[in-house]
Length: 263
Image 1 (cartoon, rainbow, N blue to C red):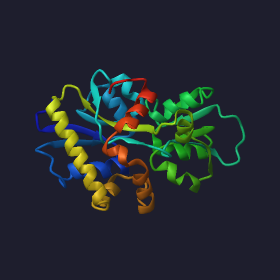
Image 2: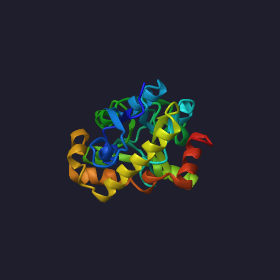
Image 3: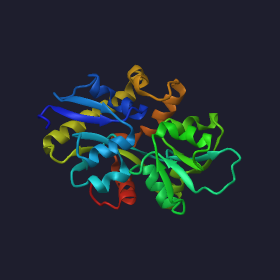
Image 4: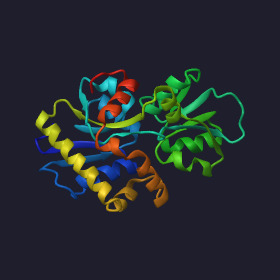
């Protein structure tokens, strides 16, 4: 169990998370005495971690919020939420056969929740590591696959083509930004400590915006794609004003996706 200053933190190794958390993890900002035991996991591993109530603080898929609401609360900052940033459904170039079996980056992910909502007729969805999906689809192991993180920026280098941008489909149907991921904190964390963590994370994100290259070495230590152009596009797309604060529209988007009125 945590003490009042040391917290178990789980985030993804993706550039948007490492960019935002660099300041607090690597001591670039005032952490108000907080320190962190950090673990890096694929998004579905992160979801499974909070389902088992293991970390004090964790990145999650927004779609898993209803299943963890008893044990975790949503932080106002640190979200991956916005417009034009959704998962991409892709298939092999020139393949016109029916799509019956697809690869998804985890059954608890927002990507899978969107497939269920937008394409309910595709019932066979197989979970696998997000970084392996593009290659598996290209090999012909699946009719199509859902790409997230860096994969959505580089799929055109493979023999793959876009079937649907799930974020745009969501926006057209709801008029809301798409909530992909968020940061949650265990409800057993005292309110004052929760507020202290939110201040520190907000400060870390502000620092990242003001000093965008300060974290680059740390980001590259964990990234799947090491090209600066890909990293920049990833950060620019997933780290925005909603990362500093969800605001009313962000919370409305969370409610639309999850069915929850409180987080």
